[in-house]
Length: 270
Length: 146
Image 1 (cartoon, helix red, strand yellow):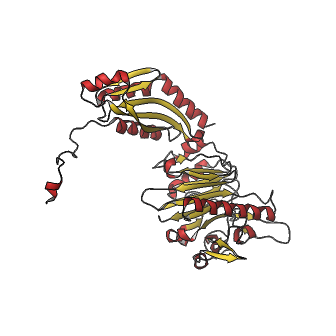
Image 2 (cartoon, rainbow over the protein chains, first blue to last red):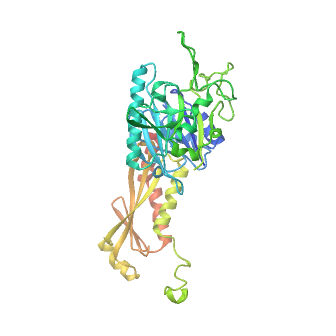
Image 3 (tube, rainbow over the protein chains, first blue to last red):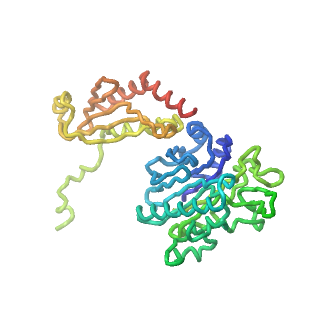
């Protein structure tokens, strides 16, 4: 079993809270966006109590920082851009998994077309990587800066994330003569207040006519080939670091003591 | 034909009896211990390569104690900081025959010979406590935190 945590730290010095989460929730791989904490400081903080200790997995991707409880040779780099890092998770006696991490352009600086175009290009990069490596056991995780229902996330030309396993297990569909592989996007099930989890990972009360209030920008998408290793109950939006809450009194992400995003945690039963 | 008859290898060949730890095992152990003590801010990596022969001025000694002189192993012991984008500093290297000992250690333009495991441990202690080693490790830690 390998446990992953993704969190957009919002540029905050949250190493202590992250270390608490890593220890309390048994996290093996930390994938971070907007992490301004120096790798040395992060390692020192994470490894105060961690057994086994975390290693930093450096790369050229400026927007993503990765720490894992195993050495670099088990998570080698395959492809990187400023916003995307694709690594091969090759642990002993387990099937190799491609871990693609991303921090998509913010809605503050990119309109819907830009975001769609980013997703379309990302989809091409992932398919190209899968073709070169020879399997499609791919997990895509990060801050998408878009909801699961937006064009870049659902369109066949984009990431093609669908809301049920049953559809995803069809593997692909053909649109106007071109075949497009599916991702399963389990985040759909986490919207709204029908569960104990918060209604999203990011809260924004827009002043215009259209306001979702809660958004799920922080997501994990899985290819059908990874689904045998994933159970929906192993995916959660975290509301605490295991000791202290990440929410304000109003039940929103507490920006004073944490980030404006809530972390997501998921496991792969490899 | 029975298994015993087919297998011509002596049965006690694969049982380790009172064997010295190999230089590689010793170095790997020390590499792991460094990472643990620095919280992985500075790790050590041991990489192995094979050379066609032992260093020339080392061959006589190896022959004297009955070790092979061809196809020597070279273990490179490097300090690595992943927090500094995988910055790597080669601290020392060890050459030895396939039998493991004797070893020749190359550190800071000096060469040290060890015939037994205990002697190699002594050389490693000297290297790890050396001012140069201290300075490099402390500088790597300081830079990774800024």
